[in-house]
Length: 118
Image: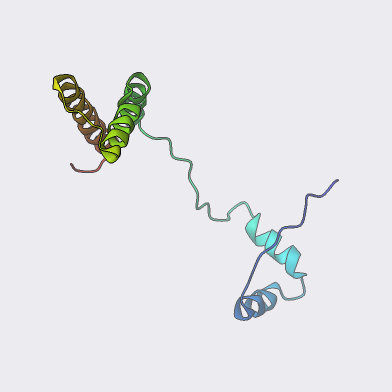
C-alpha cells in the first residue's frame, strides 16, 4: 500500500501533552488516526446545496451582467468624468438611468438570493 505525503498538525504544548496522555501506550499517530477515522467520529462539514430558487436568482443576475455593458459603460463615463471631458447629453442621461436601474435590480435580486433584507 502506497502512502500519501505526511500530514502536519500544529499543537500547543498543552494540547500535545493532553494527546500523549490520551494515547497511552499507542503511538501518537496511531491514536490520532483511530480517533479521527473512527466510524462514529463527528462530522462537522455538511455539503450544502443552495436552494434552487437562490440559484435561479443568481443565474438571472449573472445573465443580466453578461448581456449588459453596464460595467464597461460606467467605466467609460468615470474616465471622461475624471478627464473633464464628460458631456452630459440626452443619450448619456438615458444610459445613466438605465445603468442605475440595472445596478438597483442586481442589488435587490442578489440580496433576495442571499436571504438578506433590503
